[in-house]
Length: 177
Ligand code: NI
Image 1: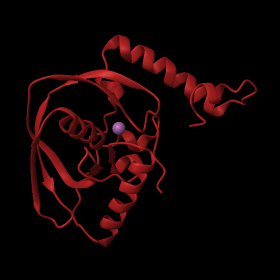
Image 2 (image 1 turned 90 degrees about the vertical axis):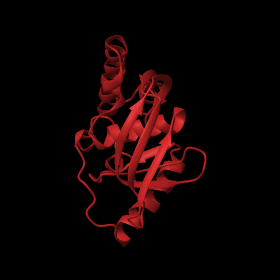
Image 3 (image 1 turned 90 degrees about the horizontal axis):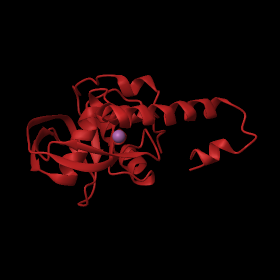
């Protein structure tokens, strides 16, 4: 199992690099990412969330695990509001409005071109993971009011993570999970 990098880790802010070679090491990484995603549990996981700054993500929108290499959103349309969370910002979620329908292109693990037109949940997963690969966390997709509140909670968590814990504050803030 791989460690999921949390909010504050600089690798989450990196614009990841194109994959230039799909080799055995990359396939192994994908296997570990899928296992890590299911164990979390989550619906998607970007490579930089496990510390690998490459353009690659895995997801499962209900039809089993899929890996997409060098993904790109070719087109998006409409608008949809959905409650979104992130394994790198555990225990928090927000209503976020993004385009509804997306057309995602990329490569599979055989280097074959993938083209998926979808919407709603799967479309949302794609947009969320694409953001990760561009160094964007969902905090940046919040409105001003949501963001202020989120920053407060995350600052408290950062304090709690470094302070002694006589009152069980870490547990209250969800660290034990
Ligand atoms: Ni995420």
